[in-house]
Amino acid sequence: MGIAIPAVIILVLLCIAPAAAIGVLGAKYTGSIPPDGTDTHLLTIDVGADEQATDIMVEVAGFGQTPGGVYIPLDPANDVSTYSARSFITLNSSKIHLEPGTKKSLAATIHLPKNTGDGGRYAIIYVHSLPGAGASLATAVVVPVFITVAGTKPAETGSIIQVAAGTVTIGQPITITTTFKNTGNYHYYAASNEVTMTDAKGALVANASTTPMANAIIPGNTVQFVTHPGVKNLPAGTYTVDSKVLLGRQVLDEKTTTFTVTTNYVPPATESSITVNPGRPATLASSDGRYSVSFPQGAVLGDVVVTLKPYAKEKLHAAPANAKLGATSFEIAGLAGLLSKDAAVKVMYSADDLAAAGGDASQMKLSYWDAAQGQWVILPTKVNTQDMTLTTTTNHLGVWAVMISSSTSTGSPASAPTKASLPAVLSIAAIAATAIILTGTAWRRK
Image (cartoon, rainbow, N blue to C red; front, side, top):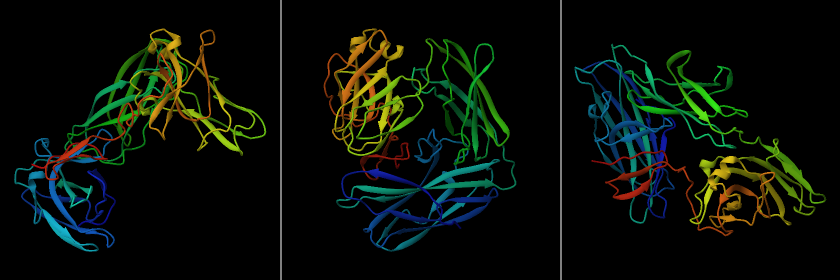
């Protein structure tokens, strides 16, 4: 029997009005079953008294994972794992109706065949509401099913498929992505990743590690560990990355790769803050002097703590049609509204910014993201090629970037970051609508 535990909640956006939120008692199954053995898992599903009447579909799916390790349902066509238990599970009901404040139970019967192999078997029971008339939001719960095949030997092994260093860009963090697959026959929790970086002489340059992964890695599934080694200035050259995936102190696998820095690398500026007072001017500068904001007297109406900090390029919204993003981005935070008087923003552009501009420094402009209008504002910018700086004035703080553009203008609205922060699209034939699933992947009811 299950107990009430936190479950992955999936929100599927369909139209306008909200649908009822589902509660599930028995939101995880962990049991040991011998070959040719049977067990039953009870699910109790409810909706709150203040919710609307809801039709709920319950389906058995394959056990998938996102690169970040989040559990996701797989449709039969994509459920090809040797360790799938999808076909071993039957439900005594697949559709229930709940009035506000009511609950109903259903049973999942799990029967392992006689020839079940060693280790574990896995499936997901996918519980989701069906949108009613005028309803737009279907909620869902992913119920992971972890079956240990009793009397067999678990094998906890894994293999690093790839270690990759992302594009090395001046002013942006270096990203090391380790792609790892569970090659054993049993799931394991708390896997972690340790990365070291050395130069051509073998001297340590930087290291990084992840916290143990909260979710289990399922046999046959592949996940990614992402680290950002705390690299300081790097001269041009070739560097070696060594990546280890560990289970406690046990090294599951280790792999190395190399990457080349073509121009001297400078890391993102560290965060810095000052208090801006209305009675006097003030200048906020990064610790390395590459960014500064000069506030005139009277720029604010009261004391305000203003912070200058890095902002990852992959989080930026797409550039407008008449421009493209450079390499530099940062955030000036602390003021909810506009300045009373314009401040001067000065940025030292990088060789990567200049390369993005095709070597034409006049194409580089400073720009900020106007969240209220959903668009970039490209500002008139003074370019000084002697000290490699860009300067402009503004009453707007927020997220900034070097933009490559022949003109100054506001771009067309753009609502999506350059790399989608929302996970993948979910298509459910039973709902017959396109939807966005906030936990990640594709599921289609067959």
